[in-house]
Image (cartoon, rainbow, N blue to C red):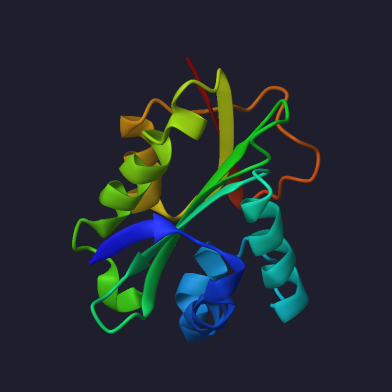
Amino acid sequence: MEIRDLTTADLEVFEAFYRSLSPETATLFRPFGWELRRADLLTHLRETEAGEHLSLGLFNEAGEMEGHGFMLYLGQAQPSFGLGLRDRMQGQGWGPKLMAAVMEDPRVASLPLTTLTVVKTNDRARRIYERWGYVIVTEGAPEWLTDREWYMERRI
């Protein structure tokens, strides 16, 4: 398994990864919304190449993408973290490894504030985030937050 930066050359495997997610996983992890559009994925990869985001893929030996970890909006006030794995990779320790790769990256490690949202029923993910210092914030949470999600922040 290899964790590496994503580029526009990864568009095909990036799209294949998102299209491979089970409905259950897609309910928990949908950074590109409910309707996956290739144009949105390409925009994300272009913005990543321009330095606006950190976007890492977890790849198996066959070159298939098995996971995606990212920090969006690196140059803005509230960068946003996300992490998702294919069902077959869940529960094997790859979530914490992919999160460590994102959080320890020099482009992320010194950010004074990072944020994320997590579905309230996703206890496994929430526990991983808490190990990295994220805490649930109820006062001042974004207005767009739904009642099924927690908003979490990490300050250093």
